[in-house]
Length: 100
Length: 186
Image 1 (cartoon, rainbow over the protein chains, first blue to last red):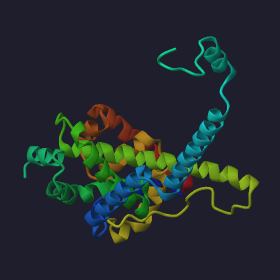
Image 2 (cartoon, one colour; image 1 turned 180 degrees about the vertical axis):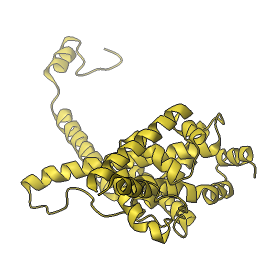
Image 3 (cartoon, each protein chain N blue to C red; image 1 turned 180 degrees about the horizontal axis):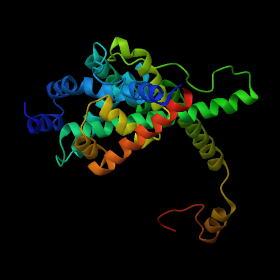
């Protein structure tokens, strides 16, 4: 191809955007932006909201803690620790009246 | 509403002001994103995200430039970020296809047809957009902002935070590179 023609085609290609019009934003653009914003807000709220699974797990956790505490309390009241018994012996605290 | 009034109302989260902002800038934002991304769906997605970002970060606009400059700056940044993310995805897709049975193409080869191109220039413009895709980011940005969005060197310099001289240099280099690519193919 002759250089002149090559140059002409190159410049024609380079200038093919001349006179172009700007593309218009798609229809209902504002409504779509609003919808997207609301979706994003909803997703954020859901992240921090208390979901049923979490509530159930927490309830179960507290239940287990309470049962453990109750059981622990029961067993400790049946048997007095030996060091407390020795203290009571030393100070005669098994029976006590105001007039002794 | 004047620009300062619009900005003040936006900072007060006025829906009317936000609606006016979108109405004023939607075509400019979309057209710029479309020129940079060369994909209608991506441009629409990014354009929506840009307005949401403007809504949430309006308090950071100090009025040192025009509102349009600030919005164009966000548009260019978000569009280029989107391109980078897309490139990363494609790269991992190539790696995935080496080990899996993924038959996805490694890169986007479709011609881009900008809706604003004159009919007699459509074929040539599609070819040119393909070459523009291969330009370095800075040259591509300046070329698109000037040729597609019709901005002056002064406006582009304000958006990109450079000088008019730098914009001119980038534009000339872009044209030089495009000529090289065109001549190589012919």
